[in-house]
Image (tube, rainbow, N blue to C red; front, side, top):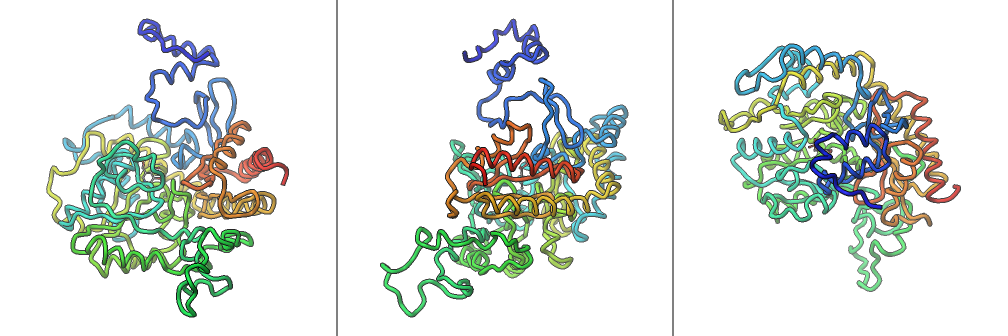
Length: 501
Ligand SMILES: Cc1ncc(COP(=O)(O)O)c(C=O)c1O
């Protein structure tokens, strides 16, 4: 029987809490009656407490967490040093407010740390409370600094849910559905998704496919031309096993060329403020660009006078085995103009911000940016403690080592199940499914079936992107045994979904 909403009197008498405490099987549905239905829920459990890589729910079950609160609890759930830093700071002062007092000791300590780990030219900071808010502020700064209004973002991007961030988010229509009109002056450019590269799918067979365009002489009549629905659909994708590290992956550089056309045909450089991109696409499916892409983009921005904004909200703060995801691809002399961060920076305490080159401050007028809670001492103290733990416990190295273990395990599973790509860096690793018969087009809903089958086995695993992909984002403290357990659970879940491999 569906749960009935509680009457006001019952709610006032804490009966929701009683339902939770008595472990009523209907408790979660009773609570849902009072939450907006627009937030999607992965499970029907009620979280109680967490430690390291595990979360316990109110019914006493223990869940292995391969999602880390969507890449947030970098130091594991309730790391004692982060907890203590928050508790100690709460006892001193909770909210001096940034307009009233520009700084406090935890902010000074955090700035010291950030100046050490951020790209060397990013020396100005703005603090906020969520990734979306950091993104909106990056857009505002780019417009104010350049005096231009257009922003270029990419296909498959996810930048958040506020109006600015939503307008540059293209990974799924449902992030925007029903919310128009969106913030205008946004142009979407193609992102290199080699596995489903449109140029590649139309190219002839053979190893030199990337050098030959489908329509060049000798002239083929249109009736004979192949398209992505043709025989090539069944061809092996560039990223299938044997695994090729990203550094060795080729790209036709089509997306960079497409950007030049975007600037010629859709948004003139003289009207374009910035290009914004995630170094490794997060919600879009952990798409990891070929090595030439970000350096090419940096050059292109320089050539046309555009700011390059890197959204490191998901890929930043040691997640990929380096402090920032882009550092796998961009050198010291190729730094972004603005970089946003959030998620892993404070291990679960809501905190976000952006770092920018000093000259970007020009044209920023006092009073035009702000926020009641931004840069608060609890958040800064949590962030300092988080960065200390990442350094002190060698979590950059752990992300690298455990990431390699995870990739190796997923590639083994790819021999038995229709996994057509394993990608990512460090502990930001995804596996994309193809069709059970080996084709590239997976049936809709496959990833959700896999994550559900993992959920049944008490493992939290998230999906990503509009295609059928699952993503691993465990705490950076995850150990070897936990990764083995996760791979074992995934293997069982895949057997349930696909049959024995
Ligand atoms: C790359 C990226 N940017 C921005 C955001 C938005 O962050 P928040 O949910 O904290 O607003 C996210 C969230 O998943 C993200 O992955």
